[in-house]
Length: 536
Image 1: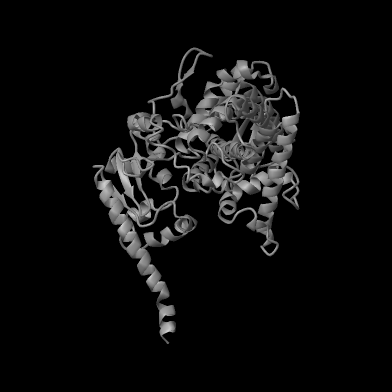
Image 2: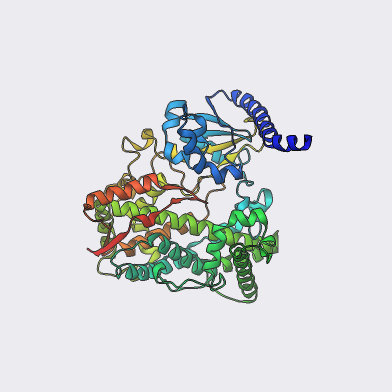
């Protein structure tokens, strides 16, 4: 009988133990936070708790319905709260405040000067690589390495993202975007724009990363593949969607024959992609080529490093190729999607953008554009990219103090959602999507970019660990814009009885209310708003 009573009481005992442990941790972290001398908010569950990450968005709406449901727990204890909150908390609490959790304290900063100081002092405020361990799918890489190994990887990666590779990105994007636009204009309406943009991004990476080209095929015209081993892009997509699963269970475990077919498919994708990279790596070591794809440059730079110091191991080469594909695919594709839907809702911005594109093109077609000559002239195209990332930065970077005594082992969270929308730096219309805010008007052809307050826009991070693929993404975005909007325009498809103005408002509402983090920040259901392409 006593065993039955103990068994029945076990859930209560576990809950009590959790509550006691959480209370002790919160008390300790609260005491530490008070020494910083800024205002404090508390939440009972760490945002890094993997179980809570799976439940937060499902559970919290229930708590909000309860009396006193508007509190720090329901306001801050879920992924993506920063995008909904924007600068509101900083306006209420101050430019620097602390969110106390049971695991670590989070110091949120909304002041450009302290933010830039954090980025400049990389030794005092390193990136918490334990948060990005999910990218160790194939080996250590620039996102997860520390110390001397990170310095070596960073030095080699910087050599890879060069102008030769950018020329490949430019020409491949123009060719693929031309095919994609041709496909879109044959359809009455497009529901698969986000999927098609992911395909374009993957194909650009295939060429720029591995030297392999694929023809564009629209999502709705593709036949379902029976195996993830059909080509490079499908297994990569499977891996990107299941990074957490691979890290948590291990690729070997996922190979067990007794597991559900869906899990074994993840292992097949992992095994195929590793074999794919291994074969390319071995071919590259034997080959003498002038191609400037990332794999070629990575192997060549690593071999040159070995002559003077330590190059990359084979595992680090695989790890970095995967990290490049992750960073260059999901971030780019999601930003493309946000930008396209914003443009569909803003016809005047489309006209403004198209005017620049036609001015640069003259009597040429987009296929005749020259990267080195023409890319710098597309200021408005870059402004569309910057403005989209200002409002919807796909991958916010966090820092931590690595137990440095001056800030008591805290996570440092640059408040992207706040500093990039604060009216003090962006004006009273700071929450509006307005690409022209980035342009200083001038004579025709003489406009230039206004980068605003230094530190108020940190879309690609800053400091020593900023994004090495920054220009890669800019080149790809501009090339795509130049093709899509040279002669075409895009509008949301209207529902029965709906005006075009109401349809545009519906798209803006979809962006605002149905965007959130999956692995990265993205539109969750863009297929709910079909798009229509028309000749200008």
